[in-house]
Length: 180
Image (cartoon, rainbow, N blue to C red; front, top):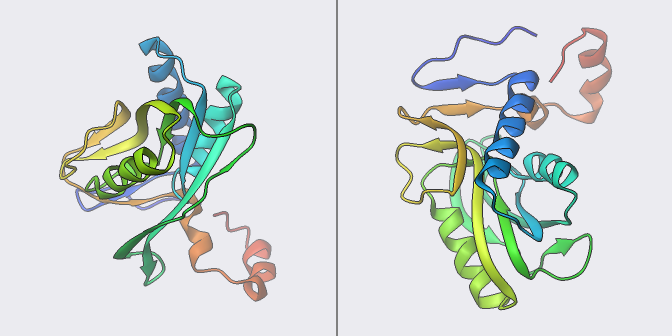
């Protein structure tokens, strides 16, 4: 599938580019020398990033569900909801934690998640954050990021095609050779 050209308003990302961004982020973290005990990804955007980092670093992956972009196929921001509980593959959330998401837009999610973790998980001794994209309007700076986006574009990630396809449409979708 050929993507539209990126502009100041829209950044179009292919699966290959997305994979490369995650690998570049993993390398930045490694080169920093910081060691962490767990990865906590913010779902949904940070799930793919967290999964790959967890595999590369061989550390447990935790998932914290949040939601703010619900309306209009995920394009309109609403009130931020943060899940009360964290799912983690091994042990409890404690020690040094790498908090992962796909991007920092305004920084509200990172700010609120950090407050939530401080209140609910006192065994966490240190938190550092990592994202693929940092938008210029962000009021929070992650510890690690790959690309700074000075024009705050809408980022069209490769998996977003699934936001508008429904099960009854899959057969036609697949027969046309369209890839999300």
